[in-house]
Structure formats: C-alpha cells, structure tokens
Image 1 (spheres, one colour):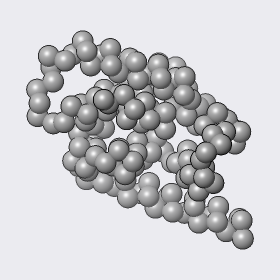
Image 2 (cartoon, helix red, strand yellow; image 1 turned 180 degrees about the horizontal axis):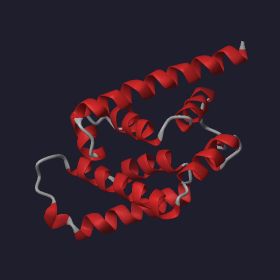
Image 3 (tube, rainbow, N blue to C red; image 1 turned 90 degrees about the horizontal axis):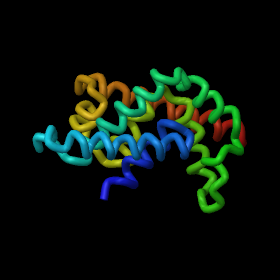
Image 4 (cartoon, rainbow, N blue to C red; image 1 turned 60 degrees about the horizontal axis):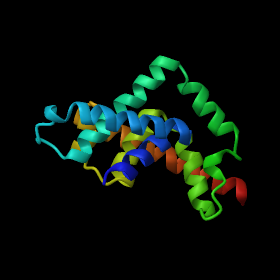
Length: 156
C-alpha cells in the first residue's frame, strides 16, 4: 500500500532507481523489525517516510556519495530518469530543477506537494522543527521558480 510512495520519494532523493529501490527495501525491513515501536501517534505512512529518509541520510553518510549522485544526475541529461518517453517536457524540466535543490529542500517539497503530507507531518518525518520545514519548502519553491524561469528564458 505504501510501496509506491516510499519508492518514489527515495527515487527523487537518490536520482538512481537501483539505489532508491535498495533503500526502499531497507526501509520496509527496518519498519517490519520496529513495527512494535510504532505508537500510532502519527500516520503509518509518515512513520515509513521518516524511516526512508533516515535510510537515505545513512546511505549518504556511509558512502559519501551525495554530491557525486547530484553531480552525475545534473550533468547527464540522458540519464535513466529522463529517458521515459511518456513524460511531458514540463515534467522533465521540473525534475531537472528539483535536482538542483538542496536534498533537504527536495525532500520537503516532495513530501508536501507530491505526496500530500502536511507541514507538521513533513517536520516529523524529516526530524526538523515545524518552522524549519516550512522554510525549506518555501525556499525550495522559490529556487524551483527561479530555475523554471531561467529555463523558460533560455528557450525564448
């Protein structure tokens, strides 16, 4: 039931489908092992997303690959995530713009706008104060607008 949201969230953060799928699998293994610790104070989906985000951060720390992944994604417009023939050009532009955001901003925007979590839920999932989560969403949206306007200006 939650697999597609977890996988989509991690794919947007990782920019590498294979790595995102591995992290999604790790997320569900950890969730299964810690199921007794879920106290029901929030949504089950939010609890899973917080585990997924922690898995992502741990992967970045362990492999020191975060910068390498973002550099590779942004410098290779023919990467796997761009080659989907059914995606409209606007979606590709949005994905390119999302790749230029800080990982925390991309995570906050994805959770809030793409997956429909409230600001409060985003703050809990990412382990941030509510105001900080809102700031990351707003700053990220401002940067997205700027990137999209720059892309539009280059075309015209």
